[in-house]
Structures are given as structure tokens and as C-alpha cells.
Image (cartoon, rainbow over all chains, first blue to last red; front, side, top):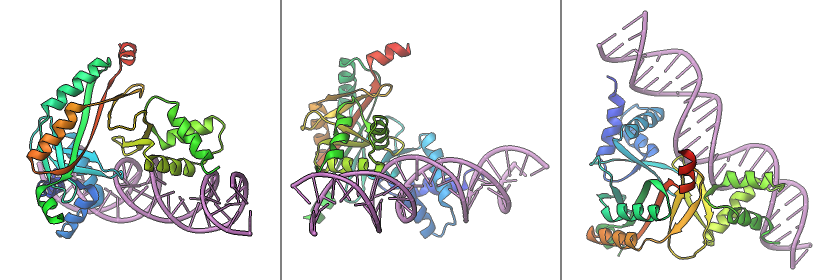
Length: 128
Length: 128
DNA sequence: CTATATGCAAAAAGTTTGCATCTCC
DNA sequence: GGAGATGCAAACTTTTTGCATATAG
């Protein structure tokens, strides 16, 4: 099958809005009746991120969280800190800013990470 | 003393250019003859980051790295991936971009993280 | 003397690896 | 039968906690 389990992981990821940790996905899959092992979840996630199918980033407390990305292109994320809902956004302004300041300081071979956190409309309303 | 060791940590951080992990600082201090313990380094780092004296961020492999910041104001970092040298940069363009796209998507209470990585002039030359 | 700081060792938490088993071809 | 996929348990890494000792005031 080559990717039976990997597909389960991919789907678990695809069926949710925001970022999920490996442990979350594992719990989801198990709760769903799957007999998948934590190891396999990690391995699937590694494979998926290697092939660029999912995005990985770290939470403030060191947990790795993953997300299935819609687009293959370079983009950033706008994440609701309350519900985890994620919006993929493009930031040409950021790209050029990063390039500019890097060049200005003599840096080459630039890469950057940009994550924006906030409370989405729904959660803001719910929270008052 | 209240902060004898904490000061050692603060200084270790102040005397270097880039981000350092707790383990790095611990190693530095020990190499320097200090009898400080890893635990204390972590506790000092926590205290320092609580009081806003140092910046914390995570490397891709989940290690927390710390840095003594010059300015108290909001700023971002341009880090050399070869030598670790760090430049603090301001990004008004990024701030407004983040605000704009967040607002556009109905998000409020925005915060963001931006880190730019590259190879500095010196390292680029050294590397060819 | 009392409160805080410190250090060592053990405990957690998350992630990875070793190894035997199972499935597909 | 052979290669890759899978699961369990053990190993690892980083960070935190428990507890006894040392130090400041």
C-alpha cells in the first residue's frame, strides 16, 4: 500500500482548519478508531513535510505543529490564537522588506519566517 | 545576592552577538570556570525572559534560544545562519502589513513574529 | 534564623530509533 | 522472498521539578 497510514495522517490534517501537533493527530486518529501508532504518525508527518505537503512550525512550548497547505507557493500564516483557524496569506511587502534589510546589512541567501497571531472575528465576538 | 548567578547568565548573553541555547550558555559558563548548574541557567533564563530582558525563540529543532536585546522596543532579528551574528532591525513595513492583512481577515489583537535568516558578508566571503 | 538561590538527580514531554512483524508485489 | 510500512518499547534531548544544602541579610 505504500502509504495507507500516511494517507490517514494526511487526511486528518486536511480535515481541520488549523495547526495540529503530532500528538493531537495521533489522538484524533485513535479516537476515530484507527490503530495507528505514534511512531507512524511522526514518520508520516516527516515524510509529508519532506515532500512539502505540510507546513511545520513550533509552538512557544516546543511542540511541533503541522498543517496541510493549500498552496505550494511561499506564503505565511495568520492564526487565530483562540480557535486555531488558519488563513494563508501572501506578503509581497514582507518579502521585499526582508530582502531589502538583509541586503542592506550585507546578508545573502535570505530566508525568513513570518507568523501572525490574532483573534479571529468569531472568537473575538464570543470572547466579548 | 539575589542574582549572582543570574548576572552571570545575563553577562554570558550580553557578551555574545547571536542567539544562544540554554545548553550553550551553560557550557560557556562552565568552560569559563563557573560552577553554575544547568538548572540555574534555565531558571535565570526564565527570570530574564519574564522580565523582558531577553528574547526567546525556538530553533527548527525545538531548542529554545535566548538573546539579550539592546532595545526595549519592538523589533525583529536578522540572523547569520553561519556565525550566529545578529542584527536588530525595525520593520515598520512588516508591522503595517501584519495589521493590514489581519484586519482584512477580521482578526484583532494582533501579534507577530518575524525572523530573517541569511549569511552575513563575512561568512559569505569565507564560504566562497 | 528565615527566605531565597543553587545544584544534583530524577522526572516529564516530545520526538526518534531499534527491531521484529506484517503486507504488498 | 524482498522491500517498505508499522507498532511497541526503549533511547534521547531538552526542560522542569523535588529536595537538601548553602548563602544573604
